[in-house]
Image 1 (cartoon, rainbow, N blue to C red):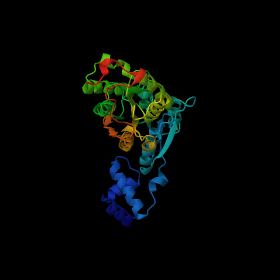
Image 2 (cartoon, one colour; image 1 turned 90 degrees about the horizontal axis):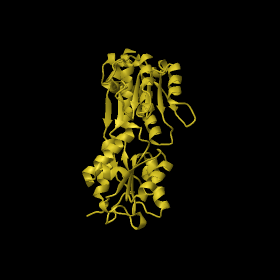
Image 3 (cartoon, rainbow, N blue to C red; image 1 turned 135 degrees about the horizontal axis):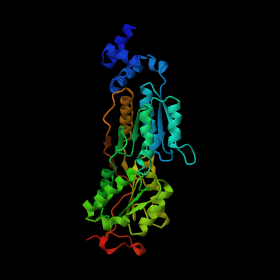
Image 4 (tube, rainbow, N blue to C red; image 1 turned 60 degrees about the horizontal axis):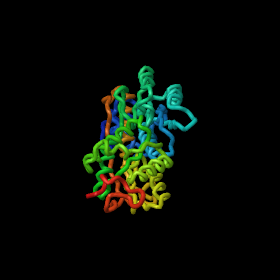
Length: 353
């Protein structure tokens, strides 16, 4: 065994004592160090003792999986947990199915060591945050992804929604668009509110529009293809030559809405999505979108949970990740007069100089 420990320690670049702690499932080992030891085991062809001795469950509670960003996040977090010797359990909310509270109760009853909530009730400003206080009372560690609440004592992981919208507006303004709309979900959600704040700030910075001039450029709907279609149709009807959407699924709906009105994307209408979901680069046209750093966010969420579970909790704060604008084929130069032609013409004050 001593020879084996020495081999693994040399391969991983750590001490034999550290290898022993990892192999024995001791807590308090840095996640990067643990990963190095497990990778050394794989490289040397040894079986993971953790896989044999530890099958602690960790719950991943997500919304429906129709939005591709949720399974992408679940995959990243599931792989990270598996590398640490945990068994991830994906619990998905579906319309008419189990609620977040029911899924949480099921995981707690089965002895889950911790839970990661993705876009859950923590992001809903109308929801009671007491459910998370009860988890503290039950000594169940948890981490919350997408949506911050100062009333909840926990680590949060989020993309910078405000910065994302400012990136989108700046891109469209540079292309000459002067009438830009935002298609978002219900206003009670924290990410929606932040997106609106960033969008309005972008319009003020790039186009000099006041809040009063921008109020009819935001359209609330559902986070779905149909929701994006309805919101985009309304914004096009108000003379918008570009639409920023709160998800890639909504953006695909916006493309459909434009085509139903005989408009070309991006020839007549530019569309920007949000998430950079898998396969979105292969749509027609390939979608310009805001990329969420899914891998980084998922890994940090797992690291934060493992620290909570080890009794060395990270700061009870929000880890905010900068998104990236990915320019593809759904955005192009705006009309020369800043408006749609024909009966979709917008108010004169939005005409380009």
